Length: 172
Image (cartoon, rainbow, N blue to C red; front, side, top):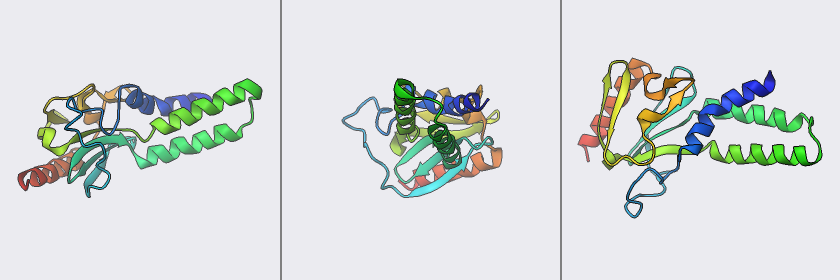
């Protein structure tokens, strides 16, 4: 049962990582892509109803990532798994390799520069984001437990987030 819970917890992280989540991979024009927006001031963060996904608005970008709460939960499960000592030899080495590899992918995010976001609104129970020149994956393609991620945010949070985006966008 424990392994099943761990695997289920990783589905979102693995989907993001395999789909090409990266701080720069979402721009079709890599020469125009700013590869690190970590210095940009965070304007607002909202977390979906399940507590798994954050939508992050900074002065320079819009990003989707695993929530800090979900990351802590997964890291705790990883630590328990590492300490279980059930495997030996090659199996233990393989387990360590897999856990380390997945752990590196967990902090990846889907990110677009703010200038690439044409519009954002709340429509039929979901956040709709119009991104110019979407890359390999878009916000609308991310799912959480079978639900589209942008449908899993609370309306009041989404509306406040959209208002913050519009205010920031109009000031540019």
